[in-house]
Image 1 (cartoon, one colour):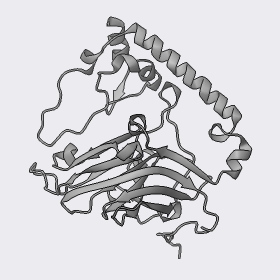
Image 2 (image 1 turned 90 degrees about the vertical axis):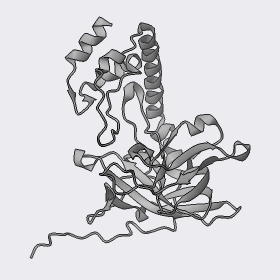
Image 3 (image 1 turned 135 degrees about the vertical axis):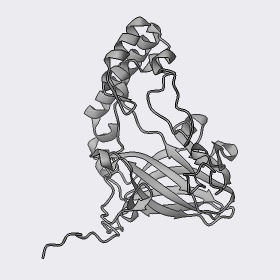
Image 4 (image 1 turned 30 degrees about the vertical axis):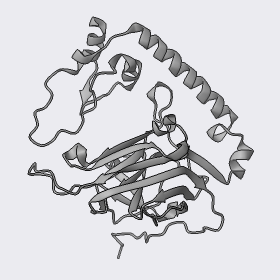
Length: 301
């Protein structure tokens, strides 16, 4: 315990994040109950005064097991890298026409996703995620409530979302999805007629781009029938902190972090969305590179 506290005191923290990522990776299983990453705190709420190191649960056995797990992951990643892109032979990668990214058939598949709502900011919307009938789809359902929290600062409320967990490599390294071999997002869904926003999060090259988000609309028609939706990546537009940007550019398909779905149509009441699978498609008939005008704002005279 004393050794762990000394290591923590020796590491410098900035903005709630440990600068020594290697140290944080190795001590990950030991600090499972620690809160290094600040969470949302409602306006007027008292900050947590208990030091994070007091929540340390030191276990030497956990650290050894964690090291074995990370080494096995590193071995598999090395084998996949030597085999070819994405762990597939190069010939298969070049001829690949479709790819299924997520398919919902078990609780393990649902655990790869995270749900959230405006409850995080004091709202009253509710959202749930479970397996559908016969364990053949993911059922995202809940109730949307646009009532604004009475905290004196929040002006808008009423959203629910579902987002994939970021891919993590060995020793807690960031991993990215490379979708550059495809040009279309392919989904099989069944909705209730309400519109959704499909969001793609990429890894930013600069810190001021951490809130960048690529989005496009998904309109469900309702009824008992499934529908297959194809959304070209050229249709996704760039926004940051909820504002559509003037300077638009295509999605960086080689740096994909997560994919998400958000409902926020300002209509109070229940909603539901069933998702069979989420995949990629290389549509040879789609020739569009980017759907929006890209221009120089400061045109030289």
